[in-house]
Image (cartoon, rainbow, N blue to C red):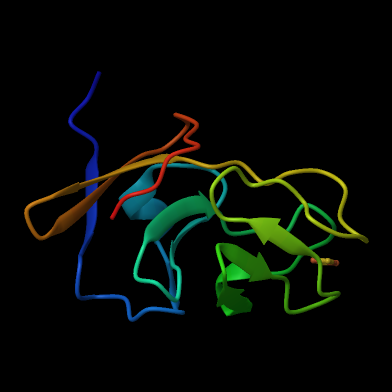
Length: 116
Ligand code: FES
């Protein structure tokens, strides 16, 4: 297991906000974003909606869900599941760890757990 990739400090993202990570940083083909729930909990998922091409980091985050800005499907931040139509497929989650004041992600390693 690798050490993960440091992507941000814990104060870099306000509650209810998201941060789109650069592909150079994540080393992935698909964009990944860091999501911070309104209670301050961090999650990591693919940025692209599973319905069409929309950036979930531009959506609304509340109560452990992100709402797509294009057609309003909501996705569970914990497991990526589509919670309502029109999306039916989940988005991929990625394992996240918080060490001291830094956030590390493990692209491609699914996670159904959240960082504090
Ligand atoms: S693009 Fe996200 S719900 Fe349609």
